[in-house]
Picture (cartoon, rainbow, N blue to C red):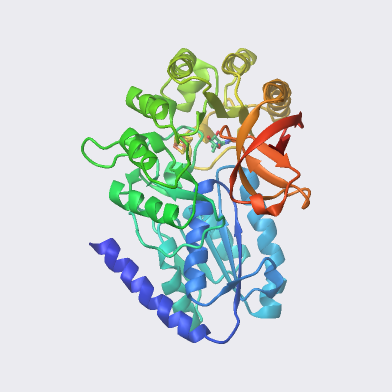
Length: 459
Ligand code: 5AD
Ligand code: SF4
């Protein structure tokens, strides 16, 4: 198989660069923007770099190689990259470091043009389809000292066995499929990640079994559209959930993101019967208005979304939902926006990731003439935020006094003297307790509601 051969070749380049780097104490700095899929790609970048004898540093100023793994889903992600790149120029001059940029943004032609014109000090530009070739590209750069541009515009392939250095010791992300065939009219993803392609079930299960042996307890399955996973004849997403559920040592299974239109009954039944599958489902709504959903090319109506939620609530006791919502899509009227608020009220989401519509070059919605003025977008965003915060506060109050199983992740980000973990429903819980509980699942009584997180005591 060509893909297998490709990885073999890259492993040879890893050996070559490793030898060159021996005894030099070289460091790498990586900045990851965007979603969990990008985070998972970055874990692979780190895996390759560490096998080539680079050591991770949190400080770009002392890095010999600086990597940006970029995102282009909204405009602010782009602004962030160009801001950061400006800061890197001085570091490059001082340290003669290598600067490499990859990820979703570099799949866009206008970005490559901008990089070449305004940021000529970037050494390697790679894309989402050439991530696995980083060893080859570093090796060639070290050899020839000429700028490398390695971006492919293809449907995409699957590469197994890329080295990986995971960020966490108990929770692991596993990409099960990549790419998207849906072409929602606002979304740039199908243009930069290629068409849907699924990993083989045996490769996924092998990876998860190894993770369980290494002590991982929680698995997050990743894909742009996980429930259209296609593992072969008669093997779909529900089969995969059932098989992962059987793996000893794994205690929690989560997945992002499914598409409401692909939520078949067998997947709902699998969630219901697999005790390890967390009963909080991320179900991107995007808009509550049937008109807007049609213009977004989402392929479901307000009513179909609500009846899917009802079906799942009926079949799965205590199920909770989280969602993504875009406000200010072209042509969105006050009535359309009210429909979104109505769905938010009816479903009573546990969490809502809210986005202001951002025009993306090359998408269908970017060419729509009825774009919404910025101030109206912001007004609607704030109204939605107000409703969501009220709902979350009320939902969180229901946790007070209950005992929850918490998987402790580590010390809390805001207060190093406390620990932080997650409920099965993915709520953050902060606990005053000894570090020995890190990486364990413990029983915690919830004592306080702090809106974005809960507080509790180990019992
Ligand atoms: N503008 C705003 N939000 C977007 N998303 C995707 N594309 C855009 C865009 N152009 C949001 C969707 C998606 C989430 C990952 O990002 O809500 O589910
Ligand atoms: Fe984008 Fe729609 Fe595909 Fe999600 S399903 S990645 S929103 S095109």
